[in-house]
Amino acid sequence: MKKSAVIIGGGLGGLFTGAILSKEGMQVTVLEKNAIIGGGLQSFQRFGVLFDTGMHIIGGMQEGGNIRRLCEYLGIWDRVHLRDTDPDNMDSIYFAEDKRTYRIARGKKRFVETLSEAFPDQKAHLQAYIEAVYRVADEVDLFYLRPSPEYLQVHSDDFQMSATDFIAKYIPDEHLQSVVAYLNPLYGGRDKVTPAYIHALISVLYIDGSSRFAGGSLLFAETLRDVIEENGGKVYAGDAVVSVQSREREITGVTTASGKTFTADCYISAIHPCALFALLDDEKVLPKPYRTRLSELPNAYSAFTLNLKLKPNTFKFFNYTMYYMSRYDEMWRFGETKVWPNGFLFVTPPEIEQGEYARKMIVTAPMAWEYVKRWENTTVGKRGEEYEAWKKAYAEKLLDCMEEIHPGIRNCIEAVNAASPLTIRDFYGIKEGSMYGFSKDCNNIVMSQVPVVTKVPNLYLTGQNCNLHGFCGVALTAIVTSEAILGRNYILNKINALGGKE
Ligand SMILES: Cc1cc2nc3c(=O)[nH]c(=O)nc-3n(C[C@H](O)[C@H](O)[C@H](O)COP(=O)(O)OP(=O)(O)OC[C@H]3O[C@@H](n4cnc5c(N)ncnc54)[C@H](O)[C@@H]3O)c2cc1C
Image 1 (cartoon, rainbow, N blue to C red):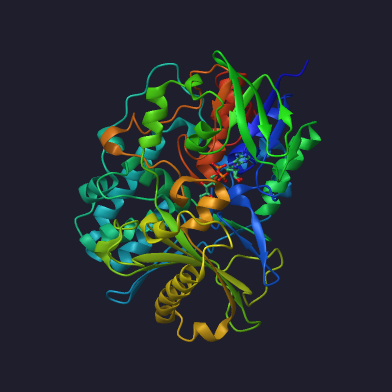
Image 2: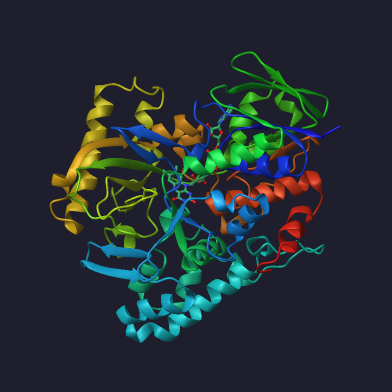
């Protein structure tokens, strides 16, 4: 008899975990509330153009990269459509304060070289900083797909300090401190709170090379779904889980909105833990201190997004991520309410056959939940005229800033679609529309860790709220969740047996 698993949530975490477990012979059922699978991998049509919702830049897909090796183990690498960013200019960071633009080239050595051109007297500091960044990342075995050791790991002081203190420890120049923190919007960084190891992991991930899905990230979600279904599993979309039943310390089944009940040997929650708590028929199946702790953990800030359809042959495709920052000292103030936008990023997502001109652009600007709180009791399409007017005004604020970098960009735009933190909340089912789920805190690292195992032996967690968020973090956590069921290092040993970097 095949061991079976029911997975709640068909986003990146649910699909990756489902793909691994089904490849290893388990009978997997994935239940997704939205009509289209994928969560953050979902793409949607607007004005006849396909836009990605939450996966614009990804890492770990270079030769020998951790997630590329996971894809190779799953046997899907040849089905993945990617376009790497320009190695000489992966990222451009513009500061409105002094109208300077910094370019970042791929690789540790060239990262130092490109930034040293702009800060010649900081070269030695940059060198020491980048060595420290790689040292900290190297403390995380999973990031390099190394089997986990049996002993409890002790981390360095650098690992545990705040990202802001870590950067200041190595780099005296305050402007450069902000420049090296430019990836902040990709991990929800908070001043004196976000741990240095989060900053280090995300920095190494992207400095080693970033990529973008070509033709829409949904293709990748569909590939993971195909792995599950080719191995005899099933992925159901458009049917939310509405209750989770339990008896004593065991989950006994889940029921969906359409009234179907699914049972399995084990259950994996790939949704926000607080959303899971709300589904439990008997919440006492999980200890109260655990539920209280997770309900009180802060979540990362949200975002305001513009999906722009561009007029044909008006705006050239660019193969990098453009970051706009208002001021250097605003770098750690995303998610606060004093200034908006204090910064944002924008991309022209590639098609599989990308021509010289772009037909679309996605702009993502971090935003605090407080901006939309007054409409929190509304639902999609019924938020009212005041909200629509607010969205339009905030879209204009972003376009004003973009005009600084690309004068005349408004003339290239054919249609504008805007999404707010409310959209993210309702689409993903995530509290306050948080982009990355639980926020990590260096002042209490242990309290902000969420293990994939729970006090209920047949209930597991996966997804961005455990360990690291994003494409890389969620995929790595899928390995951890799978190994909690299949055995320690079971998957990592298989990946390493295929060769590649250990
Ligand atoms: C605007 C934005 C931009 C981002 N950009 C990037 C980026 O460029 N690169 C990157 O690496 N990361 C990015 N991220 C983060 C990334 O999208 C997430 O970390 C990742 O998608 C989280 O995966 P997950 O599986 O944990 O959650 P999700 O992808 O949110 O999946 C959870 C799924 O569960 C479903 N669900 C919820 N409740 C139920 C229920 N009751 N029953 C059934 N299904 C349910 C949801 O519909 C969803 O599909 C971005 C996020 C946002 C919001």
